[in-house]
Image (cartoon, rainbow, N blue to C red; front, side, top):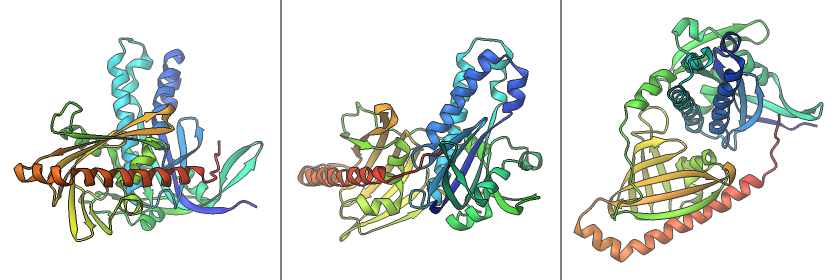
Length: 366
């Protein structure tokens, strides 16, 4: 008997795929599409599990234990869309070919439909398939009138069930209401996130980094089991940080834009002291930079993520740059070793958590 689970169901769909394939040279178009689909799969894998490729679409899922927070879902969607647009632009700039396939690369778009519900994994014809009424619903959502009504090529359509489960902030995320009606599943009320506007904002943001050659920075390196998106989620989720981070009694997060990103603040309680963090730069799943203020003084901290071992493991480089004066230098001289030991213990805890999570039996439909 198949065990029924609850979780998040996402389909990322390349818009204009059929029109693109039928109107251009096959030799170049298939290579370009394979490149873009691989980009989508790479950025959706980790927190989410690839169910299967469906032509121009990538179907992924995550049980509630893995995707427990709406922020993780929004981050996965946004980072995947940004990576798609970046890769699309890179391919376009790099080619000198004037064939239709290459010249029409910018015409391709990417949309997401996101639903929350019940599903089961069933063995059929030698492979595993996700089944259930909610699996049908998320596939029906692909056929929608969002583009016709909004003009958007890049968007995420969240079902009402998804919004209710995760408690997404409609106002902060600037979601727009949208309803679809289908003969078999009935009316589906949902909300649309404008990813094109988010992409414009992303391009306008300044980068804040702590370089590897910065003489003031302390550099720590760790090797983590698991792909970068999974490691990123454990390092940025307040609930998950409370599990692995040393001496952290409470962590409250505020997200002005409705999900984690630039402007997010964390208030961490460590015994009798507190740490205030503000995210300055946010590039899932490559790096994150924050300003930290604590009894040790102000510091800029950058976390850099690099896939290793074919993407199955992740190198995390932490660069900590003190921003205070003489008093901070004296405090770091006295307590810097203790701070480093705390970091190392926390990361060791995270390694154990990730190893245990990755050992859990997981179905791999496909």
